[in-house]
Image (cartoon, rainbow over all chains, first blue to last red; front, top):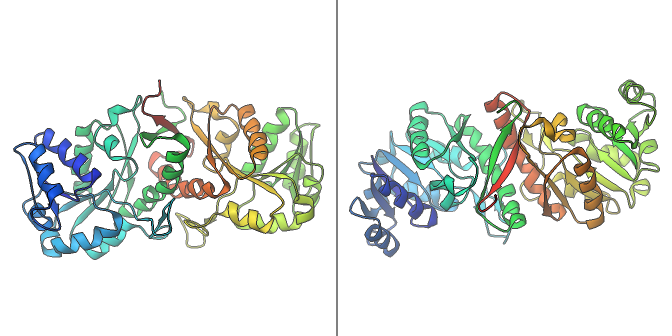
Length: 218
Length: 218
């Protein structure tokens, strides 16, 4: 596949490198062509990796990975433009974290709405799938770092889009992939962040995840 | 210990029966003495169990289990009264679920506050510990129903109160007990409910829980 990565931070670089390593053509987008982080990443990630603007990345992409800070997500998609996003599958990895009052962050949208739904409303012809927003970047692309299989989630209104994203998760090694239902279920996974943040503090590491254990399972 | 149970619903009855079975003296409180649910429970739960008003239950209690619906929690504590609650350890099992707009519920307090903190502000001399609000009643008192050890949480500002509640959890069989820190960390566990509710739907059962898996653990 040709895959666009929007965002040159830890999450974008981790996804981009993993996907390039799996043989995909990956274009990392940033605000301006020649962004040093994008260029440096592309040089390190092999011949199937390149960098350009957000719009360069999305043009021709079979899958768009939205990996910006939550506060920038809508503006970044706006730079791509609704026309280019129409019909695209967008895996939304963002969280609506608000650090303006210090640590721990609160959420700038929550409870009766979600960032995923807000983005879907702003770009109604894109096909959003919320996923991977529940854990840190290293684990997103390599769940085998943990000693037991753990859970990751899918929320979205488009079944074919969810199937495409599920395939990517399986290629990373995810086994406990829970389809929560429509995109509004992203309210659930975005709500996990306030607990994730406290667990990070209590456990002394960000390298953890939840495993779902059900009565009657072997 | 002498233990007060506030609330005659599924959670109150499950806790009351388990604690009576462990040899504690348990008084189940309700709005009016002679409440049929409280009386019926007391008759079924053996000689160490009795029923009375909320205030009857708290008088003389070493530990108070707050197991009402979230929307009634503050009013119920008000019926007990601040004087009787002063110094008491209150294990707060409630969740701020708002069903007024139908299913799934939203939260009537969230993000930058929690129900636990609101109750603590209203009754500053009580010693609140948030716990067990993250899973269903049957599992609260019998985590061994699940095929693997799973997690439960403690949030509170009073170390001795948390130690007392931790002892109760251990007596139920809990092994992965995570102390998240001060009472404001209840924002984290109350935020788990929106994900719990979607998992309930996706998994088709309420009899599940999360297990924390950490890199490097055996």
